[in-house]
Length: 148
Length: 185
Image 1 (cartoon, rainbow over the protein chains, first blue to last red):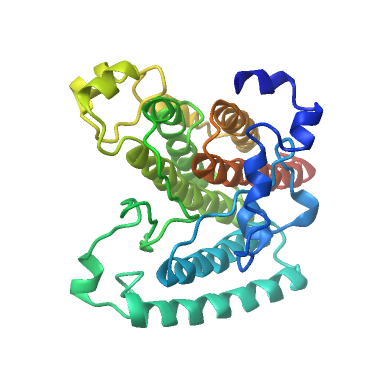
Image 2 (tube, each protein chain N blue to C red; image 1 turned 90 degrees about the vertical axis):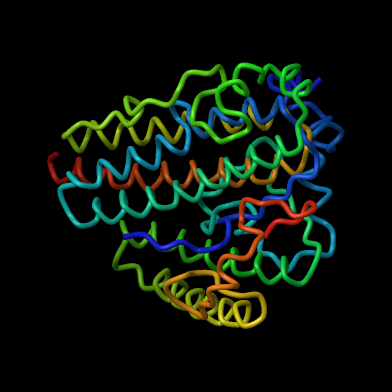
């Protein structure tokens, strides 16, 4: 069934979300919009964003406060990463450099807040604690369907 | 020197076991245009970039690709969690199991083991960057095929993110390529 879509992506079913692409839209409209679209779609630059067919992004299913706080760190961390790649090639762009600074400050304070409750994110900086560092789950471990 | 952040680049939370999808996804771990090849292609190339912009960009994209390796492996690990022998065999993973169990071994989706030939490093900056741009486009196309193959939103979400990163990396490599061409390389 899904293979049929490959050569068929301009039909009305796609536009109205009647096949597998509906997921991208379903999760866009729920109440978890505290994560920015730029992060979820994987591109900080509006003019460079190229969606696949009619799919923009899928909103992750955040289940608790820990996941929510960590996803905000991922969001800021992603912005910093994407700005850095751009600044590598455009080191004189002050507008993006300012945006970088803002996100970096935000990232630092989000990390500090998270680490004081849930333990260290890094073993060479921030609030390291040997017991908490080695404690599971690690990022690749699913804990009853939760990401960490 | 690297430091590790105890988090993924993007949330991954897979609820449903899907061994067939794990078998397809392993292409992006150990395949020719997968994330492992990408990471170490750029890592190796950074040593001969002619100026600071090139060194910085290759270094920083290589680093992000390593985070993508972790994302793909996490997805495969979650998709194969608690799989029975019968399930592995019926998904065509019997041969994989006999050699690797459910460990993460870098190979492509038909079982070819990862090879450093995928790095395709030359000492020529224009050849290297052309290779990198093509690699990003091929990985984008593979992500689109993988998205077509599934209807599980837990899988589609991270794949859409990873696909978009290929788009962004391509743009950065293209800018660097054009800049070097202008300099006369």
